[in-house]
Amino acid sequence: MDKYRLVEGRKGEGDEFLERGIASEVRITQQGKPRNYISYAMTLFSEGSNAITLKAMGRAINKAVTIAEILKRKMPLHQITSLSSCEMIDLFEPL
Image (cartoon, rainbow, N blue to C red; front, side, top):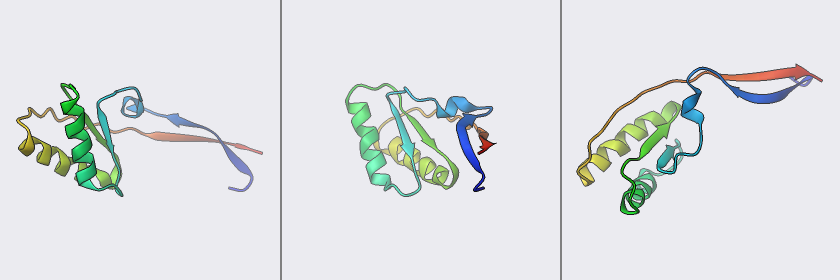
């Protein structure tokens, strides 16, 4: 791979998952602590958000499900579950 460079990170099908701009979303990573995500989501609700979106990829999906269940118990919420997938495409060109 020394003779190639990444031209641009491109998104494939299902790339609406990667779009930015939703103010009331929580992006969950594997390294983060669940209590931090829960407190951030509670802050979003207290600031007047009607809905939040929990987004996770890979191994963090288990954590996202757990956080959603904890939030449902803490607040009287209605859950709408939507799972989607996206294909990441990297484009390389020779030097």
